[in-house]
Length: 258
Image (cartoon, rainbow, N blue to C red; front, side, top):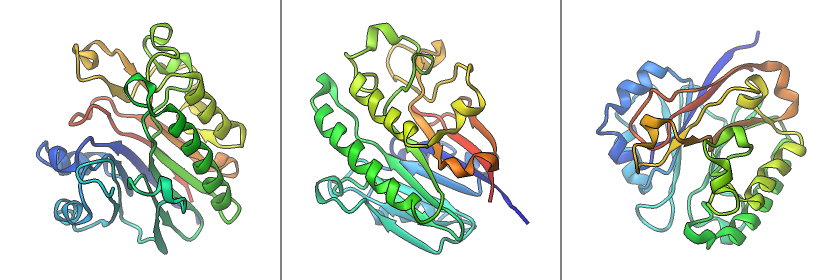
């Protein structure tokens, strides 16, 4: 008999900082079966110090070599069969950007995709990273269905960004190179769960900390759940939770029958 799992992804922009902002009360209120975190900005022992306070979840982390930077984590009620870190490409595996949990019938990857940076100084690197990550996902998908979630650092369509014209090809997260990167994922068969179920809904998951952007809802949809095409008929819901504060990103989620 199929079980419905509730999965949530949240770029917390510093796990130790968000832990001081009723983080665990917010987790209890959202009640995910699995919670994926990005931008923990902490080493593995520091992540453990925070997450061990929540004793009804197993937790795992992947931290960057550079302290206080990047990093991913997974909190999960069902215990995974296996956990692996990174994508097996040395130049991409220094920043703790990918953490993979293997379950009986699917893989779950959480990802913090590199930002192209101020002045787009890292755009070329971002492009090579996208290609390597797509290859990594393809190999996983050949074995069993995959759910991948996290901060993809790109607004895919005009509907996903409040001010598309002024940002297009000027601002990290909305250049044609980055748009093409996520489009290649979708053309390869991955489903953007939120846009699949809500094709015309304007909703954002990130707001600049400057100029009261969140209050004015001048935002971007940068956080996604993508699923393998063959999981499409198991998708129950997809949602964004802008009322949950504590980070410049809000949580996004989905429910799926597994």
